[in-house]
Length: 121
Image 1 (tube, rainbow, N blue to C red):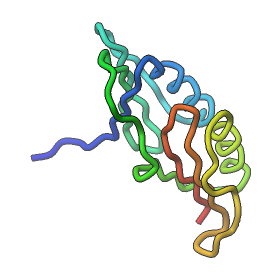
Image 2: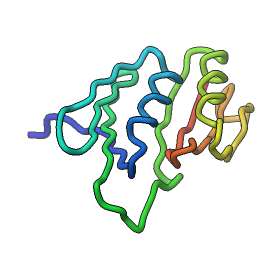
Image 3: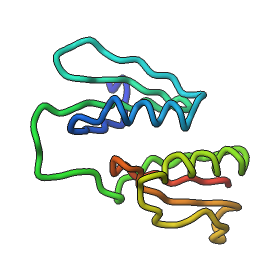
């Protein structure tokens, strides 16, 4: 029996900085940091659990935009605020606009390389 499925984001020394950004951009989210020799945190946004960890090893890979956190918003102001925070120092792949499949949509990779799709249905 499966108990839970979570998104796992692995950083190299930037997990705490990423968690600070995400809790700032999404103030309604919840976060807790685990004790241990490696930085590890649990972050919850709208009922979805995300684990952030700093790998003690350097790997030959990083994040890819093929995997995104897809966030549905209830209003345009919240989407615009999240876009502003996440895009600062990151890469905008699709700016905020109406692309025909929703009222408002944006796709951004934050400054850590994590991909976000922001949607107002």
